[in-house]
Length: 586
Image (cartoon, rainbow, N blue to C red):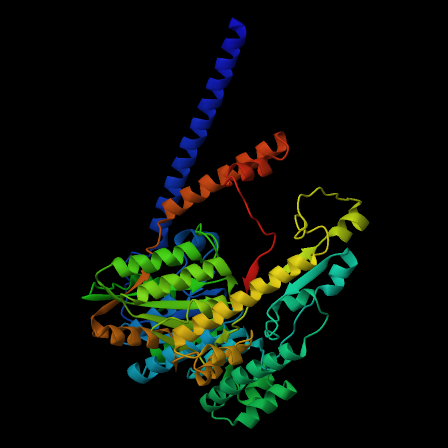
């Protein structure tokens, strides 16, 4: 026994020492890494030089707000922040050191609404500063080209492309695959919501008539608006622009030059030479770097901007995924209300929708915040379904003409995988039950008639709730809201005509409206993002703890059968009523 105790004590001591040494080593490495990052980033170093151009590099992902430091690090600095671009453009107007803007395009996920936001900012920049804006791209998407037309000179790589061919929509359907696998998907939606088509990808092999109608309507609305703006900017007619799109006669660089879509074919080095020789630019500074170097003085008042970007999901974010976390938005709204210097709130929404529970919580939080301060909604590319619900109680709603919004409706999808298990895997199930519908919601057999009726009532009831929320928020009757809802998607321009949106414009306009509603001078307001950004160290430690917990769970699960299930049950309340499906607002 003594020998055993000695060996056990030695083993435990060795393990504890090894773990402690590992933790200390990790902390030391993280400290060195964070220190190095803060020193090499140069973000806090004042810009030097009296003659430079600011480069608006839009060649990767485009986010609404500024990515946190951890996402910036993990993303290898490829994400461009719309808020930083707008700040850089606005500040560069009156900065005598800035001689020009250099717009670098190609390969981004820029939406039509974001392109319009930036184009309006560039137009204001040109009008108020008389400084040049030069565009260079290698392969431009249509939203990128739309943005480029707002600049004086468009340069394209001699081997590049302009993806100019009009708008089309292509939907992928999975029913054939599910049939082969033996999976049957139930789609349950309100009887009036024929336009609520997201779930149809699992139950059909082509578009329904209602979906085809709405898609045709909104892509034509977006294209008609965009082509008018592009034609005006390029001194062409709408007919000329559409002819180029129809014939793909502007797709290749030589053709694009001949058609008048671009001004010259050249390389990036040539553009930099133009900036240097014609506009006396000594160096080029990236907008991210420039925006971070801008000293924003504290002012009398603040306008809080809260970014709701991504799928609507319940809970709190961990800083590594872009989503609209219900708890985070609720807290941000509450914090903005508590801050006495904050006089108004702007909620910037870029979301296709998501979980009902999170949506309801955030909608309630907007209602509560609105009792204390103006809450202005600024819609980006998407503010649909749950994204519209959280918007409908805003003091004012501002949307771009190309925003996709509405989709006021609800649906549920429930898979039945019994055939897959039996026919493909040889797995069968058997049941014992106390009541008629104890297994009526099982994933392993078809829904019972009672279960289907209950779920149908569930979605019908929530649809009534949803439309009533919109009616209350917009000062409309529920009957009218129902007539324009039914799951149908509208553009911002269409939504304004229908009364779902107050005015057309971008984030800048929303900020000015917020100051006006709060009855304060906009020039005396500082725009502040809520919630406050967590530091890199805090985010990394949080992520490390989560990773360690997941690793421990994985090891325990390999040793103890059904450990995950046991852990889940241990955290549940004594009595549970759980449903194996989720209502989704997409």
